[in-house]
Length: 344
Ligand SMILES: [Zn+2]
Image (cartoon, rainbow, N blue to C red; front, top):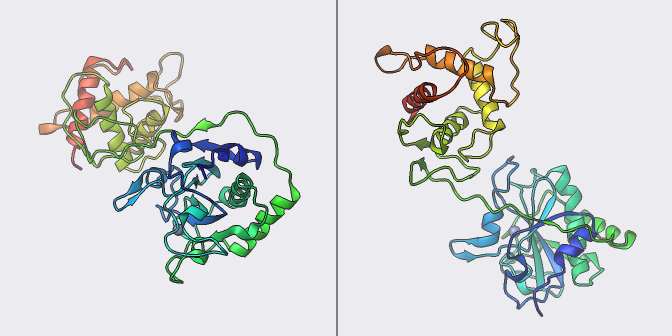
């Protein structure tokens, strides 16, 4: 039997939000004759809102080639179709008359353990099982099993404890009995390409790459008086290390999220609270908002911070006017300040 390429349509018809990983329709072996669905969790990191396990379940890990599932369920309840062909997910085991990965679709839901389900996942998981059974014209929900129920020897696997399979099957059966699949929605979006793992240290050879994991450190910046990707990338590494969390990507861009984190960093140092003087029709002492906009007062406060902070031999970083015009000398002193934070 070929790969099951009606997956996207069938999942959408069950009302799921569906995305896919590029290449899904040809991923996984075509020797695939699914009769049922095996439910897993990823045992990934707790609490993150990203998709920390999507890369692994798509491409595999050392000793276990991918794909490791057919569909990945993120914490927001989005079904990401990974593979239309056979996936490496079950290992040895049996459920009803099915045994082996050729006989079962595999679902991997992002969860650390049995206490880590989101509401969105609880709602989506049975729909996802129903949609997969639709794809093979199976209407008996007894074909849905948990990995722990399937795996041999017994006790080899604990997923997906914490999501009782008897109630999962009851929900799936109710969905299949009660609802006609809706009409498919418009074209689904491709899943964002998986973030590359970040380099351990930012350098010219390892510039910001958009990863959701941040390097631990950065090489000293060349002082070029420019807010280039390495300057902003180093700022992002510093902000991340100090617990600022608005920005989730090491991308070297001074966009709103990074500006907001910088504003909070300044606040924690006693800056960016109220306007320090009257200018631009705004009175001295007017409260400043964390508004993600790198405007006049943001740069005024950054200049004041750099003018007060002491560098080598007690010298101040910025010795120019506090005028909110953040150009050559301002960026130079900012780069000098960043370099003194290196390795902390
Ligand atoms: Zn499993």
